[in-house]
Image (tube, rainbow, N blue to C red; front, side, top):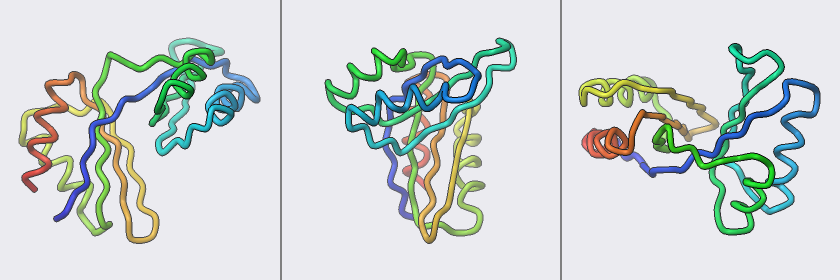
Amino acid sequence: MKLDIARIDVWVAGIDDRPGGLAEKLRSLADAGANLEFLIARRAPDQPGRAVVFAAPIQGAKEARAAKEAGFEKTKSLGAIRVSATDKPGLGLALTEAIAQAGLNLRGLSGVAVGKKAVFYIALDTAADVAKAVKRLKGI
């Protein structure tokens, strides 16, 4: 199975849990020319009135400056991998089993298949875990 595997930096920002809160954050990134491939936003259940957004990639000085001005930070509390491949039944299982067999615990996973392509974003706890996962995933 041919996998395209890349380590990625995930940027995170807190947002107000209200209409337009997320759009305001994304406006800054769009105005700087960011072409996001990954975006997840959700409420922060432990912080009423607040939400969080995760985004990637943020590339180049202009995008990084805009992200920082909008309250985004490159997260240091997790490591992430982007895996893309031709979609086929059991692909998510193959990825998660490989990571489990490496003795790694997932911090998070998001995946989508559109047409014949599948893309997964896998979050792990440390850079060492990311390196171990990349090595293991290259073996499947």
